[in-house]
Length: 148
Image (cartoon, rainbow, N blue to C red; front, top):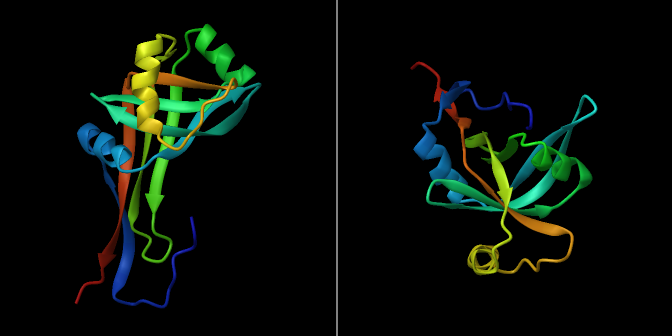
């Protein structure tokens, strides 16, 4: 994120207001790109994903890497992060979702979810994951006016 500009004296500070679960899912529904986050040998690895929210679950189209495949095979939860921040106003939000995930292999269900990703051509390396959020953490980024 960009540094806070000091040339606007009408704003005193930036505030992080916690998002409710339903609000975070709603905001995620208004965006389409984020990052799948995995741990590999003590390092955090993030890879892009395209997402949609359906019935309180997160559906992600992403490249299936060895790290992600290992995480799924070991039954570890998936973490996904998305944000939308205006660099001029420094207003926006971010949300991080963690929960169990599964690869969608059922053909009719895959076709149903594929319609959520119009314009994205699946190839042999991409998979569609469905994440059932156990934890959702996020904040709305707000600029607080200076006291008058």
